[in-house]
Amino acid sequence: MILKPRETSEYYFDIYKKNNMKKYTSEELAAYAKAFALQKFNSADEIYDKFKGDLNHRMKRVQLTLPMEDELERQSRRLAEKSLEMLGSIREEAVERRLSNGLKNEAWHPGIDLAEHEVYFDDMAISMMKDAIAEAHRPLAEEFSAWKKRQRKR
Image (cartoon, rainbow, N blue to C red; front, side, top):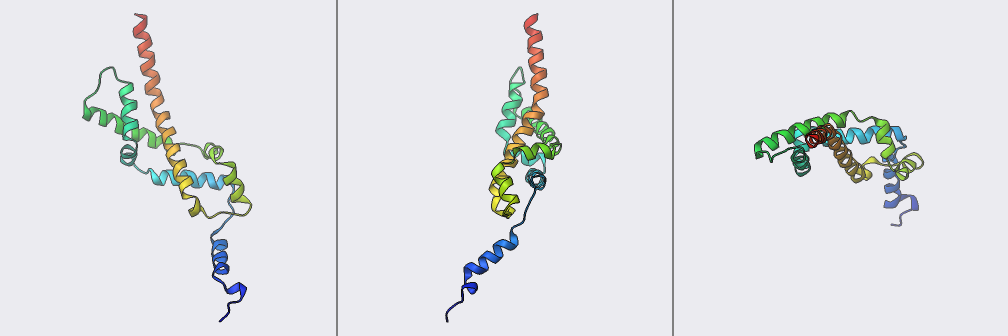
């Protein structure tokens, strides 16, 4: 039996691929990226488990003395909760600026299947979470540095 050109497996694969592909605007991609990040990090415990070293290090930097292990964990978990709030408050316009131009162009012209770019959105979610942690930590760091300046003036 000889297959006609349109009955080959490549033909059916092309049809399948075209059916999953969709055109997305940059606003839709930004909304998807934010939703992906919020789904990936949906609790403070997950954030603490994933970024435990970074959170503990940041909390140690704003302490005069090395805190006890349980106190450090409590403070780090509180910072993780604030980071989760910061992640939710990120505007989609800010996310849109972070999207790569290549992805935006590809998503609009031929269209993309979002499942094929899951690694990209995963890396972007981690990056967004790191920025949210830094933003949540910023007031503590500024307060601590101001306190240190006041102590030096004495």
